[in-house]
Length: 351
Ligand code: 1CP
Image (cartoon, rainbow, N blue to C red; front, side):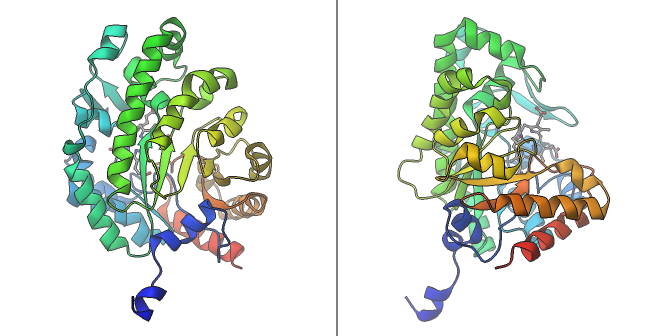
């Protein structure tokens, strides 16, 4: 290796990866969940006329949309433009993402037979993903690409409810009434999530995030026995691939320790629990990601600055801190505010 090559920064040595491992960083790394998407006019222009799930399978569109927020905001990581339902769609499940609604499943999973009829995800159907990830890694240079998948529980809520839902009552009823089929369903979703993550890591993704967005609707007891083993199976499916594992859900204050124990290096926290308290709940062996309330970005600049400062300060209690929102960017967010937050986090945390 030449001296220049040895000195060239690589995604594996990036602030994101270092903070995720609890290593010292020059400044707190920052990225935003849903940083690609509807808050960006250049995204809306590029997506016009293409259905969401079609766009996710087009390597040119995936590459360009993933890069847009990196160019515009100077964030410290890219996240693959995709969706948590994509592995199901690629496997052959009839799902559509309806504008203004979200994923809608044509034939929801309601019986034990429905569980057993679900198709498996064949890895050889993921060539489009390998192509997009390889291109992105080449374009991104030292900036890490985060690969992701939906966790078994959150995917099960869409399959069983048939679409977005607030109470997830059918899902919970199935979980209690059909424990064996429930376990089989989550097992199968874990296998497909692991296949999807491996395809991203094996083509150069430098970190992964498992989205269990709706796990917070469960008690700790149910989460621990009926869900966490399946999320752990997803991380275990990465084998010895040496990339940090981020594990996120909304409303998970009571579950933070369990979410960490599923096999995460980084626990994602929403805005309900301050990061210093989250650090106590998660313990010294894991880093934290979060947790600015996305609604704050719609307020006046003084409020934005005050809340960003608070999150950066509270994040100092964690083993390592990756600055993010507590959930995704709201579509009505002014992208200029996102760029400002990136600069402010860097300035406040510079060492
Ligand atoms: O036409 C559009 O622009 C549709 C909006 C959209 C976008 C931009 C959807 C529909 N998905 C996405 C992309 C997406 N989805 C990303 C891209 C990368 C990035 O963060 O920039 C990611 C990581 C996801 C993951 C995802 N999809 C989650 C987990 C994260 C979260 O928000 O909690 C969930 C729950 C979904 C389901 C989904 N897809 C789309 C919507 C509107 C929803 C949520 C619906 C609901 O409320 O249940």
